[in-house]
Length: 498
Ligand code: NAD
Image (cartoon, rainbow, N blue to C red):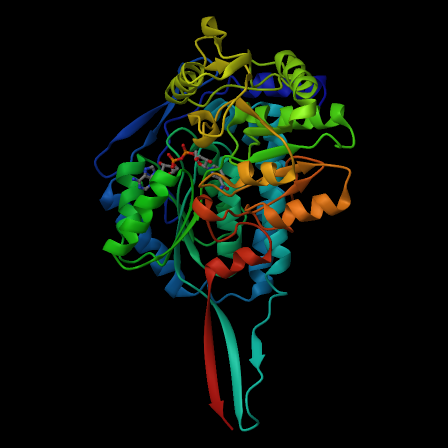
């Protein structure tokens, strides 16, 4: 896939004009009722790309109404699972067919390096739709072990109307994690993309229609979080709110639920994930390479990024040197160049936040080992060097707060209990990794670390078969795997006297 001709196709696609984008409601494009729009700025060069509709409460009402009508109508919600399966497979086929176009569109909007976006966005989204297509006619209800003169049947039913609110870092991948399982079991969906990454999800809505998803089953409302998102959160006719984003917004969604109809709220939130390297790691060069990619891919704008590097004190100097050498050689720049290893920061606002973190880490006494600067300013885009701070203490802001940018904090530890104590000293619990040759230690660490995933002798890596979710303040519930279906189904008991 990656070749000179792929680069030529990307270079042609990057010039495509993008028309003004509407809301996708009931299978039709429409402007926001009040005609409001938001300008979309490309992080590649800071130039306006297009504009999207900014939905208000009336538009959200219209989308929810259409979604409810489609649900009650039963064309999708009561269709045979084998019928839904066909459509989901077709969506996956089309995602593969339009992969390059979708990836380029998404990168122009959010800045992820194309080499990663191709796999992580249309590639992963297609895989997710396929996984749930295959699952949908293989999930059974249950017969309860009741007394002999009773038959207890446990039915699984779709919940109704799902609102999915997603962030900007991997819009298609994360969107698919919500939409595919929700649709698979028969729900209708109203999707709210992030302000700075709506374009590929609007295209996904079109693709779903092309695949034969009935009108009104998937609707997309773009706009401001505090307006469009709030209207969804407070809506009385949404049954489940599935969210990926920051903890601050996650808290608001719980409040909205409490203030409205007690809709179920599932939260996939941030992290401050520890990547723990023991002196007996099997291959320090490999560990350094994977650790660098584990924080710097997509410029650190990854929820599971290994942003705290915990290194056993005896190898600290040697290991940090290795990671810093790799980091300083990473090719940062034009995200639509296939050789770029770290693309743009999503927005000027996010870049400004990152640089404030750099400044604060310095003021608090961390040692800047490499990076820490805005670069390529002449392009007009938002770029930053991969940054490493050594001598970070667990109480420093850099060790506690999620940055969501290309900034790594190195914290030394003395022994296994010390590593566990530092790793768990965070309100987050999303991802983690342990590098060691000692099998028993690896298993002890898997048990001791409080996180949704513990990687061993690697960082990152997952597929549709395993759940992704956080513990503590990283959220509740799971995306991916069959476990995700629980979010989008209700159990109903039939108690039959025989
Ligand atoms: P964000 O919380 O600012 O925004 C996420 C979404 O919520 C956007 O669509 C936004 O418009 C919407 N929103 C904002 N305010 C709202 C409100 N008041 N009511 C309703 N909706 C509102 O997050 P972000 O900056 O887009 O993404 C970065 C965050 O997402 C990081 O914390 C990152 O760790 C997290 N994240 C988590 C995962 C995961 O799987 N756990 C994956 C990716 C990103």
